Image (cartoon, rainbow, N blue to C red; front, side, top):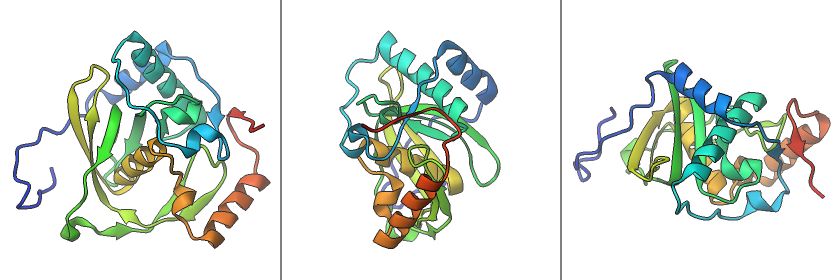
Length: 209
C-alpha cells in the first residue's frame, strides 16, 4: 500500500482485487453476453452517466456482460457507456507495472485528488476500445485511488500504480463523459482520429448513425 499524505491518515481499507483473478473473471464472462462497443461520436460517450442506485440482479448481469465484452475486445478496462449503458460502473482486468493482475468492478467511482508530492506524471501511450486502432501519448499521474461501491452497494476503494493507475483514471473519465482523446492537443486528437479511420476494428462496434 502506498504511503498516504500526512493530512489524510485516516484508516482506509483498499479492496483486495489480486486474488483468484482467473476464476473470478471467467465466472463473470461465462455468465455474461458480449455486446458491441460504442465508438467516439456516440452520444452516450459524451455526457456524464447516471449514478447507480439499484444494486440488484440487473446490475450484476450488466457487470457480467461487461466482462464478456471486455474479453471479446481484448481490453483491460471497460465502462458501461462503452456498451451503450448510461450508468456509472466500470470493470477492469489489468496488470500493474509489476505484472500483478487486478480484476474488479467499481460503481459510482470518484478519483481522489492527489497531493502535489504524489503527482508524478507518466506520459506513456494510451488507447481506448471506443477509439479503435488509435494510440497517443498522454501524461497521467502514475498513482491513483478511486472510491465508489461494489456490486452490492458496499463502499470500496481501489488503488493502482503505473499502467493500472492509468486504467482507473481512464475508465472513471469515461463515466463523466470524457474520452482520452479529449485530453489531447487538437493536433494529437486529429492524429488519433486519423489512425482510427485507417484501421478496421478487431471487435464488433456500434456504427454511429
